[in-house]
Image (cartoon, rainbow, N blue to C red; front, side, top):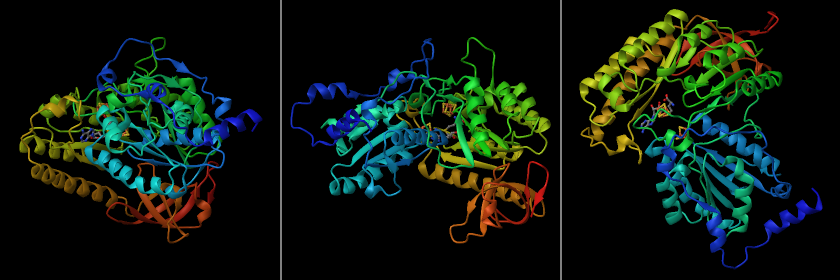
Length: 511
Ligand code: SAH
Ligand code: SF4
Ligand code: F3S
């Protein structure tokens, strides 16, 4: 650290001065607007490759520790990796213990009310730590910070929060931290613009076996129940060469599995106006990279085209498991959800996928208790589930999200009825998942070993290509490797097996 950086960091550590910060406060206060977040203009997406931390901030994290708690989806998990990367460039060290952290960030999710309640609960809890250590900075970021009502609530009820910043402001973390150290007021920086693509952000990846790679950001689908298009901005794709390069680097670093991320990966490339390049084209390129497994999430039935199916059918490192959220089996409900496909279209798509990729595993997301959903409409969902024979599903009770069209609908379905539907749906989900697992008894499957059991070093755990959890006994030296395991017994949600051999690229087997 040079003298200038040292001075800058010392300046930051100085106690806060008593003076009028009102002008400064204006500068550090940009609140979100759901109305603005809804706009989809024709403005071009800007690609930035010039992310750089100003020299004056470089010593900021010296002798300081950060802790990030992540809620929500894999995109949020990956954003946490980016923020951790920025913290570490600033000189902070990570800690697993909140009580010893100098900065605590809650990377939040707004998808359902209970996700938000968890965060408010945690914020209340953090007050205890803040009282013990008044120098601790507490920040709220992620999807909840994009909501006006949340920011207002934090301003009113959680004044121990030092900073709130949005999903489009992650690259501004050094400036936001600096402002929070300097300002007596809460720093709020949430942009509601449509969003750019920033390429060269640092990342501190959590694992060394599986890696997340963003292929696109945002969502333009505006399903009537969903908050994501407001919290994540418009659909914008990363350029193919950037993604291919990142996957190649991860393969060279020894990663075994890549999860491509986007709220609606099937819309990948739709926003390019200079090239005709879609998800099928991208997968066809990634297929050639020497890495054992490539997955993607989440796909929307609407943009799932034939070319993509053809490419996925080539197999190789493209896994035969597709997560395809259907949400409902009723045409009336799908219509008011604005999913823009019908039950028949969905079933046709499933038939096409099954015909092209024999033995493919399909999983899904379902919402029950949509406003005014009838028992018959719910039965249509159960019926569709059986017809497709999904392997597994994430199931939810509809949760009204302020600012979305569905939140304004008058709802005549009681909470009790909604819970009962969820319960009945989950029984069908369990039945099918148990059946799928049972069918594997006696078979040998390929497992990517991720770690060992907390209690016993020699009990290893990993996932199959179809994402089923397998436990088996073997030497911990196989962690991070692909192995064949013979399935002995199907449990409710996982499989018990017996180690057979390591799967090596050269075709040799290690026992
Ligand atoms: N982009 C993905 C879904 C992301 S959100 C897609 O369209 O498939 C993950 C899941 O949360 C959704 O598939 C949906 O089932 C559920 N979900 C979203 N908004 C919800 C709400 N308001 N109430 C209940 N569940 C919701
Ligand atoms: Fe939400 Fe629909 Fe977009 Fe998925 S596709 S993120 S459910 S608006
Ligand atoms: Fe939640 Fe935002 Fe993901 S609302 S599900 S964290 S995109």
